[in-house]
Structure formats: C-alpha cells, structure tokens
Length: 564
Image (cartoon, rainbow, N blue to C red):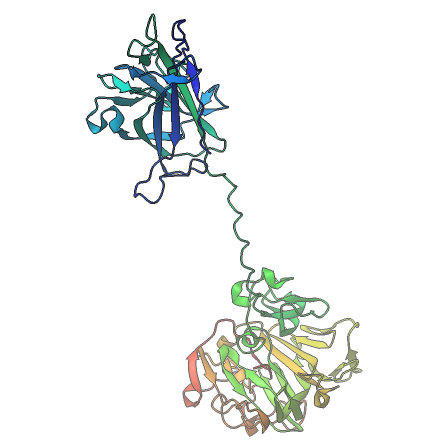
C-alpha cells in the first residue's frame, strides 16, 4: 500500500510572530486512470509491463500562532529552477543503500496546471540532479543514472497560499523485471525550495525544504507451478514373437527344436528364447528383438515368420509366404515333404475344436513319420505320436534295436542325422533339413470339449536353399520350393460363428488334388509326386495353379497352424 511520510525541514521562528516554515512532499504511485474507469496499476501488486505514474504533490505548511493559540498559515512561493531529486526504487528502507531499476522511464511527464500545465518550462530527466543541495541519496548509488531522476521547476516562481496543496505533475514509468521485495520511492527538494511571502514573518522571510517517501511492490512472485504430470502411457500393445527351444543352430539360421509364436508376456518353456530372424542370435526378451520380429497377433504373419510348419486344424503356412487350409482325411497319412533323402509324412485324425463362439468339426495331426537316408546310405524310420504324458519318439533301423528318444535322454546321432527331444518337442535334422514335432494341448483347453486333448504341431525348415536343388522338393508343403519366388495362396476355410465343418483342401496352392498326397503306410515314400531317391526332378509349374500369387515374403517360415 502506498503511504505518505511528511518531513518538515528548515523549521525557523521569529520572536515577534513565532513563525515556523515547513514544506511537505507527498509522492504516490499508481494515481490516475487511463480511461477514467480502470487505474493504471496497483501499487501493491505491480506487474511487468504496467504503466506506473508517479504523482508528486507539495503543501505549504508555513504558519504562526496568534495570542489565542490559533494556527495562522502564511503564503509563500516555490522558487524558480529549484530541483527535486527522485530515487524511484530504494531497497532496504529509507536509507536507500541500494536501488533497483525495476521502473524505467516511459519518456512522458505530465505537468499539472498548478505549475503551468503543458506550457510550463519545467523539465524532467533521468539521472541525479546536478549541484543538488537537498538530501542526496543518489550520490552513492552505482546505478544512479537509471535509478534516479531530476525535476527542475519552471523559470517563474509558483505562488502558494498558506496551507495550500499543489500538484507538480506525473512522471510516467513502466514496470519491468519485477523483483521479490518491496521498494520505496524517495523524493528530496533543494534547500530553500519554499520561501514565505507577505512580510508576515520578521525579521526575515523563512525558507523550507522537504522530503517524502512512498512504498510499492510487485505481485508476489510465486514459483511457477510444476508442469502437469505426463499423461500415463497408453497400455502397451500386446506383442507376439516366435520362440525357439534349445536356441538356434546352423549359424543362427533356425530353431534348434520347436519354433512357435507366443505372447511376449507369456511364460516360456524351459530353455526357450525368442527367434530374431535368419543369421541373428536367439534373444532372451522381446525387448531385444528387432521391430520386424514382433507381431500384434500370434497367428498370420507371426506364424509365417516363425519356423512353424503345421499345427492343429491345420492352416498351412507355405514356403515363400503362401497360405492355405488343408482338411485332409481322418485316419489317413499324407506326405508333407518329399526330397531326395527325406520323406516326412503325417497322420490326420478327426478333431472337433470348441472355440469361444464356435464349434469346428475338422481334423488334427496326430503323429509324424520320417524316412531319412544318412550320408552313408543307412535308412532311418522315425515315429512320434502326440501324447499328453511322457511322449516318446521311436527310431528304427534295419538289423538294429529300436531306440526310444524322450525328454532327458541324450540325442541320438546316426551319421549326419540327429534326433533329440526337449520337453515335448522332437527335433529331426540332417545337413539339409530341420523338422520339429511338438505335442500341444488343444486351443481353449479349459473348455469341456477340449480338456485333456492333444495334437501334433510340426515344422519344416530348410538348412540350404531348396530352390536351387536339382531334385525339387514336393509334398503338400515342400512343392512350394519351386524356384518361382512367388507366394501362392490356396483355399481357406471360412470362419463362422456357431457350428461348422472344415472343407478346404488347399485348392489352388497344390499341384493335382489332395488325394494325390496320400501314402499307403506311415513310412511309405510312394505317392504321385514322390522325390525320394531321385537324382533329378523339376519343380512344379506354378502357372497351372489357380491360387492368388504375390511376391515371395523374405524368410517366410513353412508351416500350418489353427492360429489364423
């Protein structure tokens, strides 16, 4: 709040009239209004950019007392060219040891009519007054040229009646770089600023000077509010990736055993890691995977990327990236891959799948059969049937005892062929191919119809470039290594709410008809398109296939899954 301090200086008296001379100065900030309604500012809460007028008033208090002890005021006048010195923002109280430059001169001073108005030849300038005889607080200020100002009164004396108050004018300042502490304006008049007139005070007229102060302060500078907390991140999108059991093999190209898509936050089988593509090391966390190895679903593209071959219904993921569904026929063995030294057959059985909103009558893969010729010419027959408890693979060789391979037993190595079991996943590999077969529970295994049921998921991965093999592979899956660099899509079963029966037989994506891939027994290598034991065989003619064709997908895995 602005307040006024009156200081009477130069008090004198004469014995005859007992006169006393006094001049009071009253400075005030923020007096007046630019529009007649709103004030220029509030002296108790200045803000940067405010226009801050400093109004200066003076009062003639020269007087004497008559015999009745009444106060009688006497006239006087302000002397021409006397100076008034101003410190606009003293700090630390009226001692004004330091001053701020929180107020800057706007360039405008408005002289009041009491001293001649706009026509008055009074003046104002920033900086201390020269040859100043009053109370000088500017002389010791380092920043006096910006902290102080000087008014020079008109060249004609200004008459003042006794007890009269006159307004000198307003100096228009601007608030800038507001400070935290209050400040005080200090005004001091030259010695002899006021002299009495009328020869009332004897033997000589009296002179007076004066000082005045007023306070102001900026709006309390509270620390800026802290920024609002960041919005919580959106819930992370669920990601899926391919996992391998037993790491990767053959220069990091393929899963050692078991390749299948899992949710990233899903508990992994013992010894599993995340597949990051051909030539890359197997990763311990999805956080370490390249973005291209992450998917928003466990099916579709993820299934194609993952070294997974066939599972559940099954839905085929073909070499080069093609897709198709294959029902087959229950209690029938079909060939999935036929090559020069390998035949891979699978037993199809009836399978009813209960989903959340539908019931699908289809087929499942129940057992896998391999016929593998080693580099020394030995022939191995390998059989693996899906079992809920303690699944076991049987390896047969003429004139040798059968060998059982199960979880916990050492891998069986015969020449270049390795047969091993990790968990419920069987791995069969030689120098050119890697197969896996995994006993898996039915999807939605908690539904009553699916409880305790298992099926076989299988995978096929080449460890060489089969598109350059003079004996082009064949079989339901193998035929797509046809040197055309195209993905061929076959018929897909339509997903229907309620009850349905699968009918698709990969039409459009396979050569001939589905019956052409039936083999007469589980270890038979004979069917229409067999390649086993051949020295040369041309790839299929893709131009004769009716399925939709697109450019091949790099590193697409070969497989089938009921995870669409």
